[in-house]
Amino acid sequence: MASKLHQLQSKACQASQLAFKHGSSYYKQLLEKNKQYIQEPATVEKCSLLSQQLFYTRLASIPGRYESFWKELDCVKNLWKNRQELKVEDAGIAALFGLECFAWFCAGEIVGRGFTFTGYYV
Image (cartoon, rainbow, N blue to C red):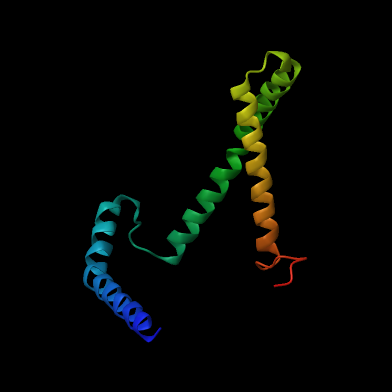
């Protein structure tokens, strides 16, 4: 057990040395690559302006998203009306989508309870 702990400790030390050695060059490279997104000068006023622009841009996009939602809902209603013509592939995709929604709901419930599983005593 002690030898495995020592191996783990040496591996962690090697990883931290590697990150220390190459971390700053990666950081500089990342900033250089994405410098078109950096606002100069970085002031509180500029950050406030950008956050307001983001908020109102999102607010302005609501009518388009609302219209897209109703178009999608109409497509689903049309599929439901013609469900006899539904292919197995389409039904499988719909079932997988429903399963994914249920899984995200369950994950959200677990996260909301602070990562505890109720009803299980371990």
